[in-house]
Image (cartoon, rainbow, N blue to C red; front, side, top):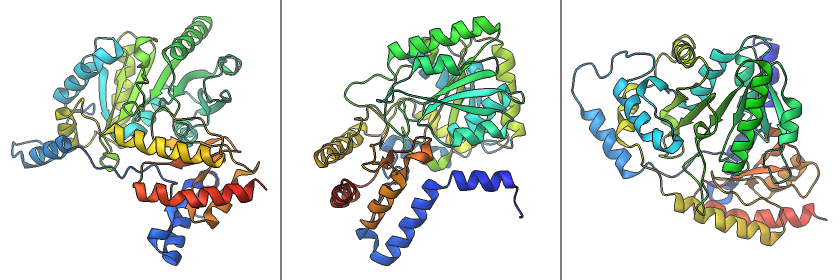
Length: 394
């Protein structure tokens, strides 16, 4: 075998989204694109807001010298200062440029963070269902992701969390709004989570870090608030990207912000900057850094996602699916009518509707639907959802 057995195994276990994507290509070739409804990928079709387009044109046209050269590994100081100023009111903490590192998307931010924190054998707690890449990011840096179940409505299970915490726990990752459920953790939940981690940190005599992976943070509905963890927990690391809030997933731009009062904050920031370099990112892309500097506070039209959510929720519940109504992001995570959700996903594929089995997110018995898609795809999928449900329920 050319590649390592470990990577081969990881590829097999993480391939559900890829499998559905490839199945979609096959079906579209056979039946035509307009007759296949692919709701498997979380790749927004919404275009960046006009302010972002203008900023991109302006930045690309800037002929000042040195704009495309290397910079400090943390990113442009003026960009970091603007982000710190924009973020401070939200997290109710006074941040500066020295608390921010520009990164290649939230994925880059998570990897430099875990590499900075982990010694071999350290553990990071994640909550089921989870973004599957967390498993691989932890392994990248010699650590282990420990999955902790959530409650039936996907809220945090604090008893399960307490049972999972141990002397090897280095960090906890939360994702709110959540992929794949759309659940948003409330202020009460974040306060309780913070209290538990503080107590455990005191018991260990060392910090357990709370990492917030929040690329969907600005996509919430019905007035639901997505609080920032820095307001509640000192040993916190906030990671986000502009992939979803201004529809720039292909530009790979985001940032990591460290609570200025966290344990060994200066050392932690130095580690993040060092790891940004040695992991090969070197620095976040220069051009898009200058763009996002100009558009802090700009967001895609969240109302469009809300409308898509309401339409699909109405149809799914009318058919009879059991599903928690998303409070944010752009996913549904319904319960499968069949115990084996892979079999049900196959029935949907027979109806030319593509979704992702829940085991791809660590929770069999469910499946994920993405609705960041044209209305025609969502509307065209309903007949298939209904036919598969009726067949699966018999």
